[in-house]
Image (tube, rainbow, N blue to C red):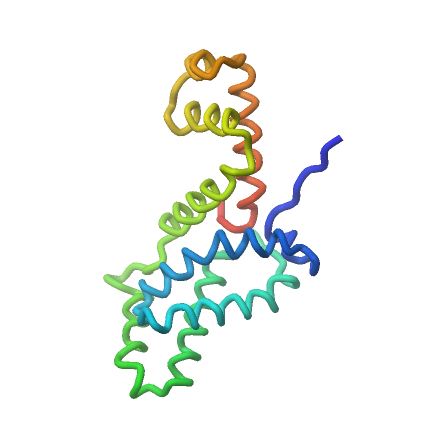
Length: 189
């Protein structure tokens, strides 16, 4: 009997879950760097800010409880912006060269939030898919990808891969189920 894997956020609550932390870092590092660029953080400061964010997450995520009424994305974004502001305070406002103004602009450019839900969702899902691909056999992955992403019929994909049509449906189910579990709590429905 196989056990149902728990979400990444739940696994981060266990102190010994190095694999969960590694996955979280792989998943979120590119997004955090993207957000720092959008907030106007200078390239030479971005790594420091992202590192500071991960230090906060290392402390806070083990006790973090996901609330469906709140946004994990919003919380994470707030942590990043607060670490950037701390970084500016440490360096001094004069040395910042307008960095504080860049944060205000990034927070509300043209009356809309700079960190749109759709952009965040697309970024995190794409990164999770990229990381998950190696967790499946190539045939399983290709069957799901061709059927779901490319929109090809299960019969057509099965014929191309030399597998039963049911295998394509099974691959689709396994990959999508794993993706949902991987992203549980990380993206809002």
